[in-house]
Image (tube, rainbow, N blue to C red):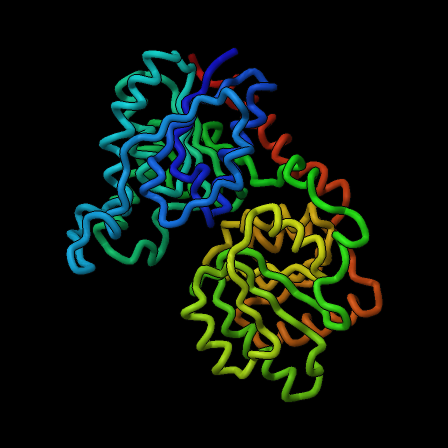
Length: 414
């Protein structure tokens, strides 16, 4: 069996990031496909929040080594301030200092056939590229999001560091992997001299094993609230990329116009990570009886909640048209009706339509949201809301995505 050195910041016991699941599922499924994972990750002190609920999903015997790492903002700040150079390309830049020597020791000991690193965090790619340069092993650079974008990162020096890292990956990695076709097109246009065959797409997905222990009895799938339609958004609500302002305005307009009745709808934003921003917004639009800001819960409890929701909510702004929230694939597996507030021209809308989801409105259009939401609620009330297409859902499993990665690894140059 060949071995793969996997450089990933997001790994259990880190809590609060869906990015964990891509690395974790690859690590679980690759052994059956001929590749043994060797995980090089960060020491848990670097994580702002930890949880043990996903540690049991790390397969017994998996090699996991945790290198020295700190969070500049938490560990190296003085009175809340720290030099920008210590947080460039990101706040975990010091991870490189511990991960490179640890990775070289792992390479000497385990003799992997290839290196795989995943962004974000940007430092993971700096580690992957350094280990590639020092060892000569082929390197696969995994981009869960595009890196240097228009206006992101805001700091010009950080943006330049992102640009250098992504260019280094595109030019030096044997393969650069993206999670959406739009991201692959973006990078093909940005680096036209890089051979197209070195760019690949492996989408995100869901892990069937995560759903196996869930309660599928009538009690386990009972509505969250009797007599009230519950619309659930599970995961981070970014204040730019998933700005709910127009959604809240549409709710207020519908309530004022009488097209949304009191207590007809409860919007639950689970683990938004931005309650301090969202709570004043909810108060501004007087939506305290409609919008609920719910705290984080263990991963499988969150999946169980999705199974019980009357509808699932997708938020994705037009500035993320080359991205698809990883949570969407778990939404598909839950089989619940989905409403997407996103740009119809973006990759998120495309994957929703491919799954048979057609209740889509622009996130920045109050008028469209009001019309599509009312239609969506009526279909739920009448029992006519469609679930994602079963054949599409079956193809979106993490096992299938792992097969795609294993096939890509098998084709790497020696």
